[in-house]
Amino acid sequence: MYDFKKYKYWFNFACNIGLISFICICVCKLISYAYIWRFRSCGGFTPVGFGRVCGWNAISIGTLSIGARYRIEALYNINGEKYNPTLNIGTGVSFGNDLHIGCVNSIFIGNGVLGGSGITIMDHDHGSYQQSSGHPSSPTIPPALRKLSHSTIVIEENVYIGEKVTILQGVRIGAGSIIGAGSVVTKSIPKNTIAVGVPAKSIKNFKHNKWVAIEQF
Image (cartoon, rainbow, N blue to C red; front, side):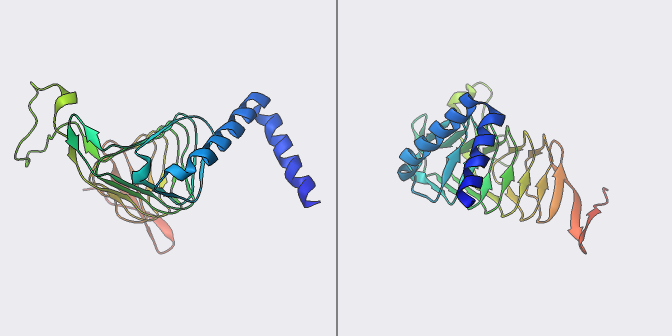
């Protein structure tokens, strides 16, 4: 009976999404098994579409489910500058379509993180634009040739990241937090917090078993 139910599930799944889509998913699954050994370590990599991975030996994965058209890039060399990237993805992590992760420094994504589609996570910028920077990038230099600025990103466990969110360098997102759709995270977000906007700002905290609005000053 158990086997019958299992096969019935996959038959209904194939009918719902269409035969061609089902075949593509199966092909992607087989490809993931063929390439899983290339990661530094990997407990499971399940794409439902095609994408690109580079810098395999800098990437460690617990278990990752991902949509189509992904770009997961650990970059060792850009414009002659050498880097030592480290990308660690925990267990039970899932993202939708069009994920882009760019790593030259360090990115850590904790267990149980769930993300929508169109998410960008970048631990570097083409140039330095902070007032405090000792050597700010000149606008006379083409952006592609500017020296990268970079710093670590940490996304702690059980974070939910909405559709089309961008997470920039130097950010830590605390455990259990929620980042609203379309937000751009430029500064760290505490744990158990809802943050939204461009740039993202905290609007609620989870206290005493309920979400409480943060007073804005």
